[in-house]
Length: 338
Image (cartoon, rainbow, N blue to C red):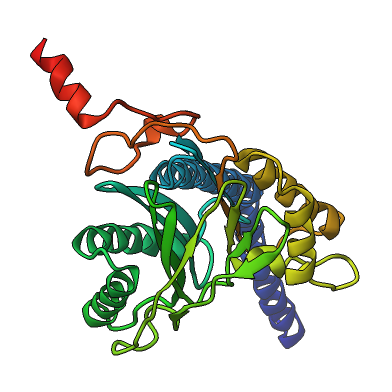
C-alpha cells in the first residue's frame, strides 16, 4: 500500500467518526425538542396560577378591609339622634375604606359627651389607632366631669403608653341638656362654629395642643350656652382644606357662609347641605383627606323629656333612630312597681 492510499484511508476514518458524532448530536437534539417546546407553555400556566392566587388573596384582603370599615362605622354611632330639644347628626366620609377621622356621642350620667377627632395619616394605621383613642376618651370622660381634665389625661396616657404615639386633633365637649350649657376642650381641631339664632358665628377655640405631641401639655376649657335655634358645627380639617381644580381651598369663610345659609334647617339637613356645598366646590376633584361633620342643634320649640338610660354608649343599633327620649327615672321605677 502506497503512502497516498494510507493517507486517504486515515482521512476516510476521521470523516466517518466525525459524521457519527454529528449524527448522535442531532439525534439528542431531536429528542430534546419536544421538552423544549413544552417549557414555555408550562411557564405560562404557572404564571396564570400565581396570578389567580394573587387575585383571590386581593379579594380576601378587600373583604377584610370592608368588614373593618363597617365595624369602624358602627363604633362611630349614632349617625342621627334626638335628645330632648337637641338634634345631633354626624357622619364620616373617608377617602379610603378606613378613616383616621371619628366622632362619638357618649352618655355621661345626665349629660352627653360629644367628640370629633382626626388622627394624623390615613388608611390602616390611622384606622387601627382610632379604636384605641376612642376607648381612652370614653374612659377618661366618665372619670372626669371637666372636659379639659379628661382630655389632659387622654394625652398623658397616650404619650406614656406608646413609644411613638399617634398625633391626633380632638374636640371634646360635655352638653348638659337641662342647663343647655356646653363645656368643651379643643385639642388642635379646627375651631367648631357656633351659629347663633341671629346668624352671628362664634368659634370654639379654648383648649390646647394636639394629643400625642407633649405629655405634660396643659389644656383649658371653654363654655357656651345653647339657646333655642343655636347650632354647633364641628368638623375635621378635610372639610376646609378640600381643593378644587384651581387649587383653591374651601376655607373657613365659605364654611361660615354655608352654615348661615342653612342655619334654620334640622341637624341632618345641615350636615348633608354642608357636605354638598364642599363637593360642589371641589367640582369633581376627589378629596385628599377624610371629611367629618358633627352638627348639634337646639330646636326652637322646646321638646320636654329627659335622657335615656344611664351610663352607656349609644349603640350601633340606634344609628338610624331619630328619637331617643325616655321616661323619667322616677316614673320608670313607678311603672316597675305596678
